[in-house]
Image 1: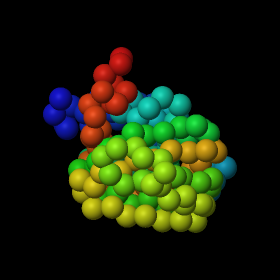
Image 2: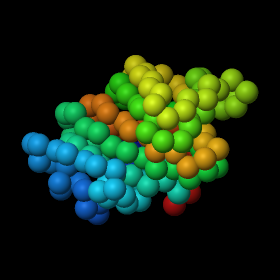
Image 3: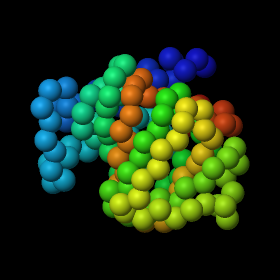
Length: 156
């Protein structure tokens, strides 16, 4: 499946998020209790919630979105077509590099931590507690799983 198809299918879930239209405005202010959560795009494993704070992840240009994931959530090894700039807002992310999910080789990043990866960098994450992270980067955003069988869209 081509990356454009993955992007188009994966971001259909964002169309219904109330904050999406608001995020398109030029001046944006967001306070934590006003974040409008909705289902994360289907390109991510089930169980996460997402909120677009600014911009449009499907279009060229800057955007910011938040992901809220439950305890026990994991994203298998994958890459992104653009830079990935992530700040952990709450909770802890267990971050690992490479094409295999070796949990013994991860680094635990608590709230307030930050990481940035260049395009095409293979990595994986898992979470032991509910965690909120913010991705700020340029679109269009996408995700490509190292093992195509890990793509949640394959099971639909």
